[in-house]
Image (tube, rainbow, N blue to C red; front, side, top):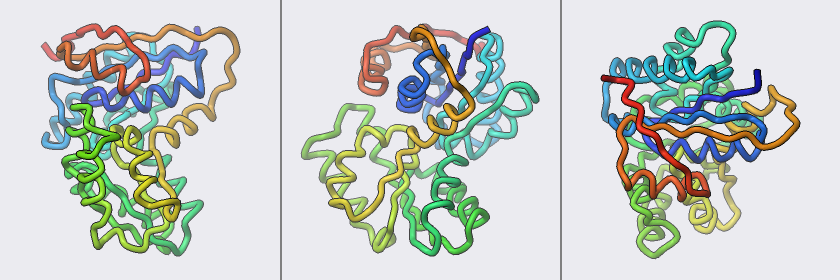
Length: 261
């Protein structure tokens, strides 16, 4: 059996992670599930997030996935152990937080690192807690940036509107003096160029999608032709299908799969 990687997110933002994994492992078949019926996860209870994540993991395993990737910061914070329990010992499970924490801990000793993310992710304090455990010499500054994900979903980036919103967040007092900035939401790789332009090379930008893709790819050495992928959502709309091109880099066909009925 070939390598089949199941990837899920609360919506379509996780397609940035899927795209990064596909770039590293073109021969792997990806099965993506966007839980568009319940997005965003940021305003859901931890118990609800664990329930949704368990159902999605069961669906991806029914598709014979040999590895699972939680491509959502909020689900990674609340449901990683739940998904591991569902997957069992033979199916590796990756999240979007641990590889980033590992990257920060190995490169930024005794420095200040910033994290921008949704309110839901910032509220969990998952990045400061895990980075402090990995290396207590690192100072972590967190900034909730709630307008960014909806702005990106609506296609407002690389323009004057996005520039104004991004700059207003990045000028925040708490982000002064950082050596690196973690893009702590799977939507944010789409504004990486604008974030880099603001800092003018003075701050390293950590793109979680690429860091996670490197972590997943480390376990495989694949040859052969590029595999075909499948893309599912729990609630289909034309708007989501249109946005997939923005997030995945090419037009893809979405299938609706009502796994929660």
